[in-house]
Image 1 (cartoon, rainbow, N blue to C red):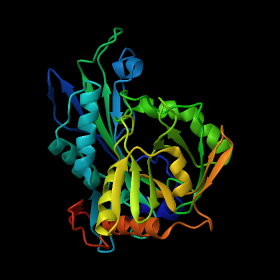
Image 2: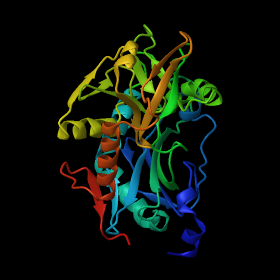
Image 3: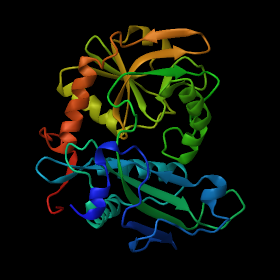
Length: 346
């Protein structure tokens, strides 16, 4: 372990940004992607008329690398992130970065920044952030003719300070995250900008996240803050289906694990009143894996749905959480071929 690693208190890291040694970049010009460029600077220079600044032509992803007990480094389902980024590109008319190029960037970054990969059982991981932005200089509303793809990494701790412990969440009917048939199914910054006001208001009131209802009828559960929602009832894993929900890779994985554990899985519209019937519920995503829900307060209707009566995670949520994390760290057999292993990174 080198001096800079020794200066990092892995166990106390939050979910924030720490500059690492290198990032990689690639430009799309004249209808094709160029070669990789490696940079030690975490700054970029772009034209002030870039479409990313004016018309939101921007997409991003988030995935993690983990160091296992065996010393090997593993990345969880990077191919799925590449596919989702391609879907976003289709949705907002940006060029698709091929999966093999996406994986090349991940491979390069891990080797270039290996000293920032946290040790096993530190509670920390290496967060990988791919980003694509439109660089074309335009004032008219139309797609750019030039793009930059870049990827950087940063070591992170838990997303929620409470860790794997149930927290209260709120329904705030005066706010929407995304509209049906809009950009909700794509990972673009605008969706997160739309959630900032309600999210900060919820935090100021002691809630960990906002549970958004569908924008049309306000009857069905959509997203759960920056994550997908799931509920457990009668040995069934239930998660919302909607035209404005970002498909979560973590949720997709949990659905498979739930089936492996003998649960039924339902992906369908989930009426808000079903909250009364759930034995367990949580938010799931890359950052936290699972964030169990203690209760949901519908602030407008002044109604509370109690999920965790003892303040502890439910047994199924706990088992799913532990199973997924064990696969990510190499402590449980990866029967579905989800992890990309780097035995050559010491």
